[in-house]
Image 1: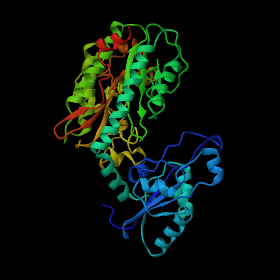
Image 2: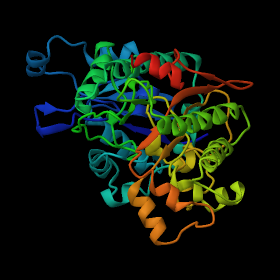
Image 3: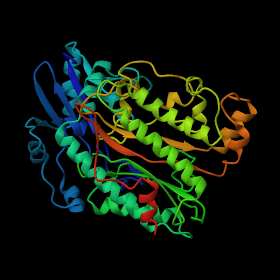
Image 4: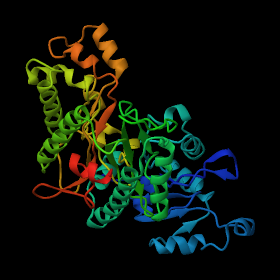
Length: 444
């Protein structure tokens, strides 16, 4: 797809928390992992399309490194494990690229997302940091997206391992939660499950009684009777493939009647989205199947009104569902988000600018091998309710007096991970409790 030139891969470096020797857990760049497999800091790599060669650039460990880190395989041994036999010192990367540029050859690189990468590009290619994000190779991006969007059977097996660990994390939280606990206790418990399984978290844990806040990473609240907990967490396997699940469960042993009503509508939307999944169906239509179910379900409770299709077209449903139904998943929990949603989730087509729809990360037609999340939810966001009401927004579709009574409700969602098959879909991993009866059975 790229044709000619050199594909440049920038590996990640160690990232200090507060001083050089106290680092965050190392995570290699996902595209570097996909093509080279090497989960080590301080590496660069190229695929020379014109000369049909692949080279790893890096430095061997010194005796000082070994004193602190213990006996380690050499870089040559590490590279051989992944089928790479051409290994050169890191400082030769600059020489190789300089010679290629002098010969008029094109150097392709992917969009950068770490400041260190911008600095490397300045050193290697003479590109100012402010320009690095604008000079990446679109051909390279499109080729990587096309490869990584289509998961192999081996990848699907690894993702499924991550999903199974993620299910264990959610079941642990559902069983453990009690009034008087802090959110942090539950967050710590699910983190322990991921680490004990030999992996890491695939993203920071969301464990909150304020489920109306979509990405809430605060864990300081105390669980009280009458509340619900929204848990959104997942495991990353040792090979860096991700699981991503969400659950909502009551702090009490059972949901209240009002909680059951909203939870069931959300679950109905989840099932409506699942039934739409098959090759050729645009994910945008999957999203609107969930939105339609939510709007109609709330209409039965008196919170919404009017023509449903007109409401969806106007974006009135975004009062309760201001985000998307799902996203691609794989080596990244939001797979390849650094490469741009317009290519990953939209196949180059423009995104909507309408509130709610503009947050839809995935809209393109489904293809076999795509791994996606399904996670519609219903959220009552007091600030959004107040703002829209003050603007008299969508008055023909929203019953604000009824909605006002739900400002203390918070939010609910369920999430599962799905692979698109030749004729439909398959939910990955072992079942996660999601029906009202199944959730309440764990809360006893």
